[in-house]
Image (cartoon, rainbow, N blue to C red; front, side):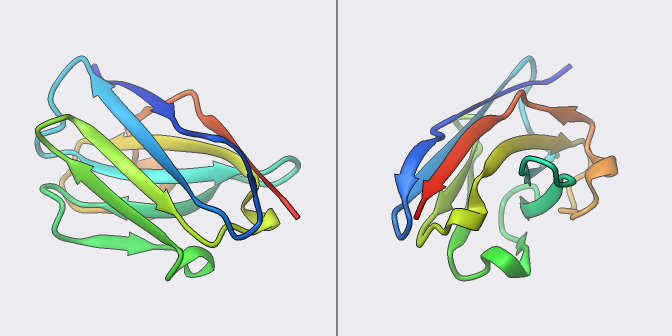
Length: 124
């Protein structure tokens, strides 16, 4: 069993930056790929970014490409989402997820474990 806890969300002005963290416990993330998803009010959950095991390949959504970067620190069992040039449309609850397979995927249903989410609000 893997427990995921997100942190780093908050309120930021448009153009600002935030770094989200996702700390895993319960077992090491060895061989797990990791992803970030988000859900805005009244909208479906959408893929943001994913990283493979051990972290040499990433994929990001077109909507955040060039602004968001996913990374992982395997020694710390932690995954990060660096968000720059934030826009009001990035406002959402951001969720971290873990997939027991090493290849990164954009498909939410493929992930085995999910965190509780952290709120990100971008003001205009």
